[in-house]
Image 1 (cartoon, rainbow, N blue to C red):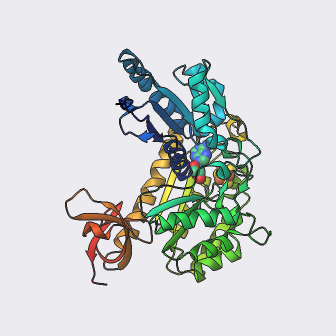
Image 2 (cartoon, protein in one colour):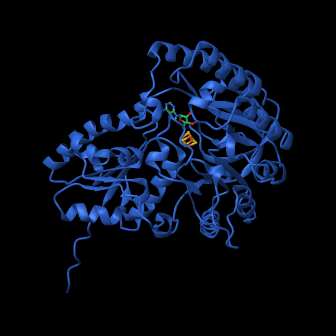
Image 3 (cartoon, rainbow, N blue to C red):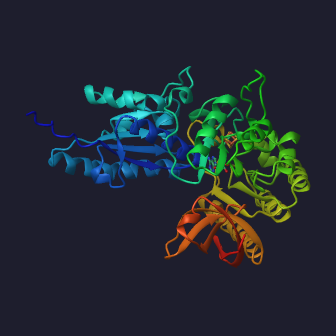
Length: 452
Ligand code: 5AD
Ligand code: SF4
């Protein structure tokens, strides 16, 4: 009789994602690549054989979070060592790309540093680190397309999914690290995106959000060998049967072409919601930011988008306290907000990023920045609340995505990305139902399902 070899415990990975949706997508792909190697995900740091931090470098605070987390992880690693367990710590994402070997110097607990262009090599680099002694740092921009080497999609287990169609940025706004951390603009070919989208839909996905740092600069190779625009890509993917909704983010005003605006009019699967950062309201600051658009350009764009799709809602990103911003410049920002009106917005104090042109300009005092942010957010919150309360009495198609905290309740999303709570049977997860909105809070809605 043969005795069965003791079954090896599967290796576990703890993944923490910071920053933008592109990182969420990347973490999912890395998770899938590790699953193919037998890793299972854990939500307990102390259980993890591999700790993977997918980091963000966009503002100083975001980058600092990494180092505070690494302090805690060092303690956990030490405790596990006492129990005879090894822990590998990997840092991915934009801090990895920007700081590279510096991370290992500052935080010797780190075993592996991997830039966003090398995620397809993650399993191999983990193996290399296990075999060797020195930490592994991989932050090159390889020639080959990582997407072509990542395993086919096995997740996600949800009704909505992100799909990165474009990475990098050639715009070089003077405040932004993205052109340095994510590199030059690169668009994935249409065929590979269509295949991935089909696979996602076959796994139960009903809504796909196309992602890119500069998504509307998309110019990937089409099946005809020509460069396709984002507008053509949206229509192509919208044709997939079973896919109900599409979105895309983040766009730059400069690349908001007429054919893309027309898709908002003509493509019913495209949700009436657009994230279009304007960053600042004064032309002087926009020029100093190298934004390549004026406030007038932005007004015109908002107008033509609303003409194409009258029920569209806009969201935006705004920076206050950019070097040289006067009170009058800031007033111009408030004025754009008042004139355009936003359903939602992200606003930030300018944060100097090493290596970017604006970091060398004369900085405004912290107090001035904080005060302006406060005033701006007061206005934005007011607009968001009035947008939300304006939804009361409307019937929205809601895509139910997850179980609510209260028994018998599901949470879904309206076309405007608002979270909507409603009493609903769990079988309705992944389905779109008409919901009459009965109440609105600052950040979510609730309502009642209407018989279809
Ligand atoms: N400081 C503050 N905000 C920034 N953003 C990008 N870089 C900086 C910076 N250095 C904001 C922009 C961008 C969003 C993702 O982050 O508004 O659109
Ligand atoms: Fe950064 Fe500007 Fe590129 Fe957006 S367009 S990623 S803000 S450089």
